Image (cartoon, rainbow, N blue to C red; front, side, top):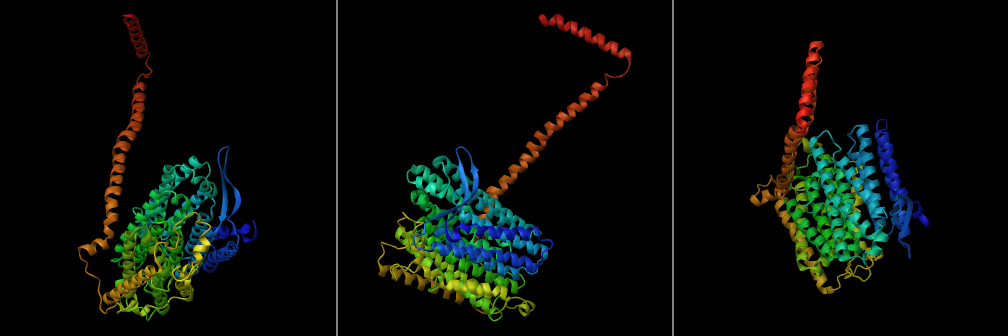
Length: 636
């Protein structure tokens, strides 16, 4: 163990210290101290991550495991609590701590209206969230990952329900918590199966044994892991919690949806690439669920009017594309899109927060319009985010999306066509939101427009940093069609994905075909953007009157209502039946009946104790007669 790696425990420890200080001192810390501690510990953690990343990028670096203590140690089971530092974890460390630091700085201004106590509580929750996310990506075993996995679920519950006085927000937090637990059960069963099958649970131990295991076992384990990923990364059918998670403050939405929680499932499958590459059934299912989720969420986003809901369904759709990349075996492309998505989606959420802040918490894009003059920095940075997510070169999203589509085409042309359709819809609904928000005439009240103003520097500075990353972030993955060995991210991650044959480069596509497809996709995306401009950049727009199909999309395909009908209501009816019949009339009636019988019996027996000697003599004589009759007739 050398260099910064031996001090790598500081990376998760610093946010934990911040959580403890702000959490325990929330009743007497000032806002300035709370935000300084909350943001400061994460900036320090980011600096440590940079030092670790510098160590990892050195030639000849091999995976290093930092042992901390024995988590479970018995005669037949040894599970250490250790941190693993390699190329994949180092990349995620930079994303989590880097984007997280910007969100903390942004939060200091965005949450300024909160009381000192709640302000400190907010930063304590943010720090706790980042701590568990870092444990998730740094853990050297599936058990350690699971600890971070569950901790992230708890922290997201606290953050989504931060404004706990609003019962709707509490319901959204509970929905996220419960739906994640469904997926977590699959992950937990996979851990038990691995322990039973391999006898170890560390990555090195499991991956070393994986190739010798029966196909049925590998397939079963990977399918259970994918169920866990479906819950955390919001894939069909466990995706409906994520749009409702918009109940939390906007910086929380950026943290959950951009760089951390929802990418946990992607990280888990990328980390388990050796097992998934050995299980073609599981890989195909990952691709199918991924592209189906991407397409479904994109159709819903087309008709949403809440600025945060559009971004939420956009996140679900982009996650689907990441799973498509993993499912076709292009793990680098999936991780690449995680990185670029963290840049532009954090930018878009924080930009939306700046708009909401300026509009005094108004989120309906049909009550906005013409804001580009009043919010120049927010407008420019938001436009950059839209261009990046749409996939316009040279912005970050172009490179990662192109790599996903190319890998999908090599695997299956249907995947490619559906991915292309998703990309075109993404460009359309993102620019629909952009034009309705920043172009045309202002559709709110005069008083609202009078008070609209640009956000303070603490909010616009992170926007500018993220905008810069959204412009240049994709250049670490230049397609090989432009230059051999120019895909530096693929080279960097190669040691983690050793043995995986299908990587970023599309071996079966000629360079001319690849360039033609690339150009064709960009042209179609530009056409999609201009279509949105012609429809939504006009003066005097009012809320659209939807057709029957439009209403279907507005109501999110009625999936929530379907779940309510076939799952929630039957469970409530069963619970009501058990409450009224089983609990009240059987269990309670039995318990209460025993008590009443004892009371009745004691009242009757009390009558025997009358205090009259004559009564006692009579009872004695009657008892003797009964005794003799019993003795005489018993033998018969």
